[in-house]
Length: 268
Image (cartoon, rainbow, N blue to C red; front, side, top):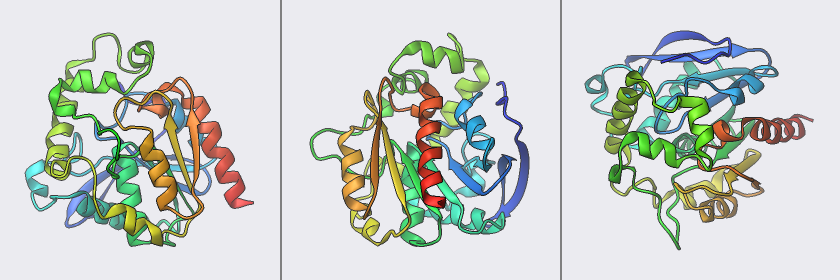
């Protein structure tokens, strides 16, 4: 599987008594970017754009592909557990009030982190996050289809998927998606992809927050963006046109512009 073209260096450190790996690179204030449930993409213009102005940290989740042996993390059984591990990662990296950007499933983890550390981040950016139960629709059940079909469903335009993963994804990529789905099922199966307490816990979050959504998301209903905006005081909601769930991969330049302008206002 081809690595990203951005100049990130892999670093290993101990978290929760186990080794975890993080890609890092760029310059400037720290940004922690948490991936979706189907892991790191082989290329990411979005991360490249962020790394031109900030120092980007992009971890592998423990037990997911390249995140170590899942059995070594057999005590990790919920998204709240994973959020605690990510907070320990922030401390282990020595980051002081970083911005946290969560993509999809990573947005859910970022939101859980913010409930545990309401003033611990400079800013919070949630891109099409799971985590809140929709009232009119449902979060798409990835276990109904193959891992490739689920990844494809994240794109409004299949040309975007093929630009990132190829018309026929490599065997290593398919294997990675299988590992990622195994861990996702352990952490988020019941209830599926949401925490009923999260909307209430989010009321305590005090950092500037941006919620962004693709206008053609077929994985997480757009209604959830409004629910997140309502749950977090002062949160801004920005819709990205011609984008599915994988906004950062399908409209990387547009999303990067939105995020960078938001962070510029936060830091001004």
